[in-house]
Length: 438
Ligand SMILES: [Mg+2]
Image (tube, rainbow, N blue to C red; front, top):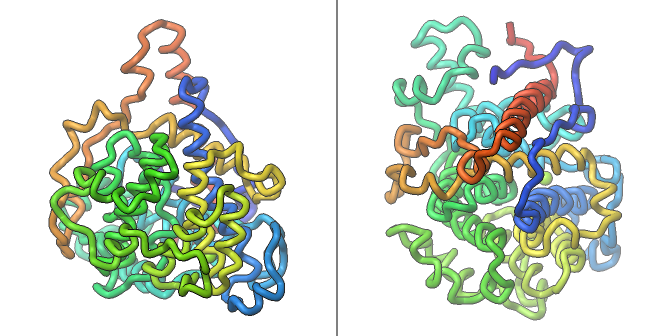
């Protein structure tokens, strides 16, 4: 699928993209409900917190958020979302297009969002974290160097390069400084564990790798590995007691390979978020990834519904949208889409697009039969990791092909693949034409 931008008069926003769903009706509707809940939960948390982003807790204690609101920090309409959801949708669009973990393509899509407003709710990138911006600028500089070295004429050609060419060029996709540990790595995570939920070891490893593209600190890598494992467990139907158990890490140790978690994440895994007093007990919705993870888990632990937890996350103040977006990924997977308040689901901007993407993630998700073919996953904290060591080798065989053989299902499968192609064509036509695209 080639990546193209439309001309100005063809520009489409996310809610204008034509929705085309898989033809096949899923047999496992419970898992689909959890996957959809996680992706929608992320976006709803983001939208709930958007109008009060950067407000201190004292402000939210006086004027607590009780539902979707417009205005405020970014002047958005109620239900519109910010960078958290845009980046998550970029990541999801890469996974369903490449049917694989392709870090180069993920970075290309993040760059489109940053430069051209790809999958932004307003058509522009109006907010971006410092570490993410620096990493995407570094990625662009590395791409331009590659363009010069290989004599390509346009940025467009560089964006289209297959992973094999990137691998041959020994292009380093880890574009961050070593000490970047912002919550931006965690806010967009869900598509990775949702796509790889059937192969938990791959899901956990790729969760960490997805962080490293823009956030180079080991603690960001391990925060994403731990949270990715929790999302996988939630999609697989583990109880809330199991997810929140201080034994979760020990009981799922084989998902994490031989590399132990960073001490600060071990503290969280040991239950440091279980503080009944919340903000008064030191829980903070700040921009560093450790307190952000702690705050999201506190919101999940201290409540028994998606609604109460999301509001608790937002009303901590500070980085409200991201704390709630992190919460929403796990809580949405646990409670499921149908348990999220319907008024929030209906108010959410481009909700049908997000649901459709969740359905394609469910349809295409990396099947457990591929686990023996899953690579040589890195067990080292290798900062110079190139794409060659994190290719999964999966080439997108559908689950139906493995479990059904009737003509009817074969036809249905072909129709779904045709639909996927049409949907992906619609999906890439979203954003402004690049000035240097020719
Ligand atoms: Mg945001």
